[in-house]
Structure formats: structure tokens, C-alpha cells
Image 1 (cartoon, rainbow, N blue to C red):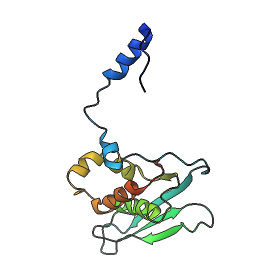
Image 2 (image 1 turned 135 degrees about the vertical axis):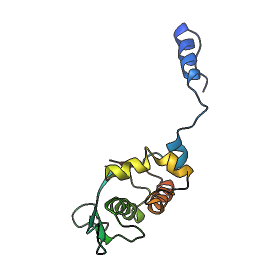
Image 3 (image 1 turned 90 degrees about the vertical axis):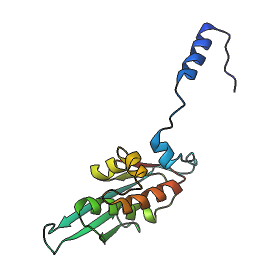
Image 4 (image 1 turned 180 degrees about the vertical axis):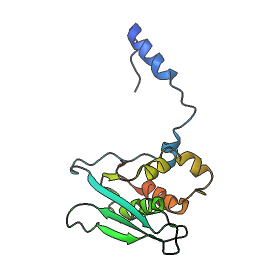
Length: 159
């Protein structure tokens, strides 16, 4: 639509809008894209809590596990042993997020509570890691997470 330009205030408003740089797209929007609007029949977003733990890190008996909790009795609740190649608590947290969204409905808005490591990997460092094809620690898991997020039609918030 064409904005009105009859008054000085209208012209200043148009000038302000046109002054915003359109040269560089937000790297996170470029990576994840946009979601569709939420259908009116969808109530509150689902809340998913994730956790990761690693034991015996400095030994040959190292093992790690991930947990996903979506609410009492939810079919999406799970606890999973974390696969290699290099097992760590950070990997357990990343794997928990991957397993949380793997089978979760793509059209349901969701808030996922995760670790600061995962949060920063998928936001602060996402552009840099994407440019190097996720050759960072746990990049194999992060690639899967991003591919799944890109398929989502409803929004997802990491907290």
C-alpha cells in the first residue's frame, strides 16, 4: 500500500522507513527463515524441558544421557543414551534438543528450555558455524536441529 504523504509528519515517517538499511539480511532469518502465523484454534504453546548429563568424562567408562519432559504422561517424554563420536555434557544437551523436536508436531508453537551452550550455538554462533558447514563440536547434531527447525510452520522459542 502507498503511504499518505500529505503532511510533514507523513513525509518524515516515509523518510524514516526508507532510511532503514535493506542491504544485509539478518543471518538468523537467512538460516532459519520465517514461520507462518499461528492458527486461531491453537491455544498456548507447548513447553518442553530438556536436560543432559555426562558421567566419568575422564575415563574409558564415559557415558551421557539426555532427557525430554513435555508434561506428566506425555508421549513426547523420553530419556535417551547419547551416541558418540565424542561424548560430553554439551553433546548431551544438544542431543536432548534434537530428540525433543524430532517427533514434535511442526505446526504447534513451542517453547524449549535448553542449556546456554545450545542456545548460544544456535543463535550467537550460528552464522559463523553455518559458514564452516558446522565443523564445530557437535555440528552433526546442530545440522539436524536446524534442518528440523527449517521445516517448522509454527514458531519455536529457545529459552
